[in-house]
Structures are given as structure tokens and as C-alpha cells.
Image: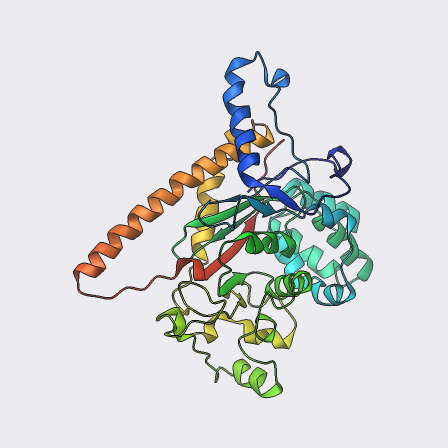
Length: 377
């Protein structure tokens, strides 16, 4: 939820042998030490424990019982130095619709500046401006300008929640958010979720499977093989794909199945708000509405409610250094999670008191969201 206003040239380059692995425990201890020592020095400039953002010492926050160990992944440096493979480039082309969606999140000042670059009238409301830019993007040169302007910026924060809105992981991005950031988080988890909801799922599945083959499986994370028949039936609303192990764990678990479901399947699906973010007809098989066990259970609005609440903290978070900002953000989310858990436990008690059996597979289904809330660093 932060935006780090940092020039790429000001960020320390990682060592030549850096492999994207960061010790989360060590990083967060250093951040805590900076905050503690602040009361012992005249100013933060003289603080010997200050932690500055860089590619090789900037870890996401993932709970100790949720991550696979102290070592987690942060491969942001590859966004600058490593081009996409031909297969990824083919799949990761950003559609006009998704680019328009990103324009709606840009600050008005930057949006008007983009108008100047594209020769578009900057007057009027945000929707007026975005509509004009959208029309201008039909010209390839203007499209390239918009794409470059949106994706060259420093990024927000990527958050991973379960359907009951508990935050499992947060990644504070130095560069703009991408499927690479969520792949870092997923591969750092102790148990890979059976179902992942994301707003650019095709890109996520492509990138993850390129890094580690069969990360999303079967069918590349689609619910069924993308045959002409399956695509046609899904498009006409005649297809449902049941995942019974989401409600009742498999009696004979798969060899590498999730401990809560017993299944080793890993699907990458679109939530309802972003299922039209793709022009690929095969992605109709990534719609969450095809799965009866999830339909009506997932709650994309929970993330928006979280972001809305966090925006109220924007003013005082702007006054902090990057490390202080992430330290306080982590603490705010800790209390947020405690409150969510308390409400959930109370509801469970009421439900069980009515003699109802309740199954909740929180870590088996995770939603992945991002936002850009401006924070001056």
C-alpha cells in the first residue's frame, strides 16, 4: 500500500550472486532495531541502524507459521535486469482494458501529466480524462506511452488474504506490482493454496509456471482443459466444475496435497471484478463462478474495505522513512488480523451452537490484491 518514490539509480544494486532469497526474520529484526534506536539518537540521520530499501534486503511480511521458513523470495531486481522469456512476453501483453483499470488508480497530477505527453485534453473529472486517454490508446504510439508511464513507476503493496479477509502476507514493492511479486509470495508459503484469485491470473500462471514448471496445475491452472467444447459450454453458462475437497478433505490425500484439503491441484482464477481483464477466450475457464464450492464464498470486497480503511492512515504514514512505514503497517495489520479473527471465532461459536458443521479452508483459497496509496519516502 506504499508507493516508494525512489529513482532506480538511487537503489543499491544486489550482489552478483544474489538469488532472490532474503532472511525475513533478520530483515524485520533490523527494522525493529531502527525504530527502537530512534529514541537514543538526536535524529534519524544519525541512526546507525537505519534500513534503506534495496533489492537484496527488503523482505515481505509473511507470518512465521505461514511461510516455509525464515528465507523468503524477493526477486524485484529481475524486473529491471531480466527480460521476459518469449513465452511470457506472448502471454503478458497488457490489454487495453487492464491498462485502463490501472489508469483509474493513478494520481490526478500524474494523470494530467500523461495527458500532456499524449496530446489529450487534461480538463474534467478522472473518468473524463481516462475516457479520452482510452480513445487515444487506439493509436499504437500513444498506447506505448501510456504503458511505459504506468509500469515504470514505483509500486504499491501487494496483499494476500483468505476469504474471511485475514491478511496472510504483504509485499512492499520497490518497483511496480506484477505477477512476479505474487509468485514470490506463493513460493514462500509453507503450503501452496489450491485456489488463487488474482486480477491478472493468466499472467500470474504463465510467470509462475515459467519459473517453476507445474506450479499451477492441471491445465496451466485452468479448471478444465481449454478445448473448444469446454470453452463453448463455459461461455454459455452450461458448465460447472465441482471441487468437493474444498468442503470435505480427500479421504486419500494426494502425495503432495494441501494439508487442509488433501488435493494437489492448484488453480489460478479471476475474481468477479476482474474476469473481463483478458481477451484470451481460454480464460473463461478461469472464472470463479464456475466453481459451486467457491461461488458466493469469496469476497473481493474485503480487500477493498481493507484498502479504504488504510487510506485513513495515509497522512501520518507519509511522514515516515520507508522502514518505519513498513514497521507500522505491519503492526496495523497485526491488530486488523486479531480483530478479524475475534469476529470469526465468535461467528463460529454461534454456528456450532446451532449444531451446524463448519469447514473453513482459509489457506487453501487465497485472494491476491494490490493498491497504490501514495506515501512520500
